[in-house]
Length: 159
Image 1 (cartoon, rainbow, N blue to C red):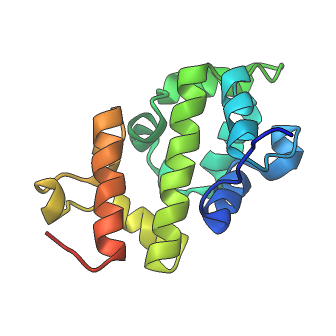
Image 2: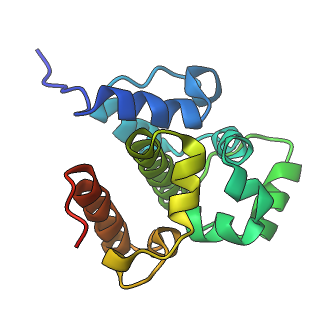
């Protein structure tokens, strides 16, 4: 019997998968951390990024934020969109796209709507030394700080 544990927060996980287009776009069912690992290891389908950009207002309104959020320049994104084949994203790109969708999903649950979460991402935060959360998503250390900040907000600790 294989030990495959479901992700800790089922609703956050489902929201992440939905932001990326669900099983229809991902071409598979993703039900566990191991499924997620396999998907990211192989690379997300490029259509998952397209779906995310369509679903997240700040990404299609401001192309500069696309690079901050997922590390893909607007020019690279446009070039990939013109590509007829659905080449998977690289592992690094896949990880960043997944992490952004996961962070946005968590913030949406916390703030009550995706619009509020998107607004939070682009506003300077006192607890982040007046930096915008989206600006910190470019490094693993920054992602950890944003996640810790969300946890503090969740528990009512605003320092």
